[in-house]
Image (tube, rainbow, N blue to C red):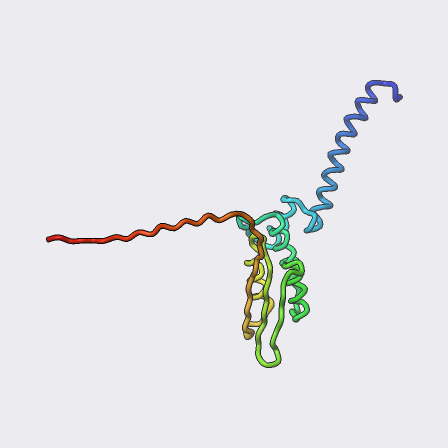
Length: 163
């Protein structure tokens, strides 16, 4: 049967369809996991979570926002708050509190992706109680190289009015 041209053509046509089916199955499998999903999967997750993406958001910042909202759980404890901060900031933050002598929370994040600052604000508002004083900041460290040219001009002007 392998020698017949009709059988060969039939098998090659079937192979193309099976390859297309394999790609669709792999895409569906990737879109089942937030960190592996493509833009189609991101849009589906955003739709489910009522998230409106900003035009300047990158694919990674959109995934980060989805992960934060997907993993919202109650009760909120200090450890839960730190886990959510770790998820948002990828471990690149400092957090502390002063619960003994006051109701204060300190957070310094190092976020650089668009939309992450807004997500940090939402996290602070949602998880932390309203009776806490929250001191939050974001520091982005950059390194730049180049030359700076500076020029100066000095001028003296005398105005005379003759009447």
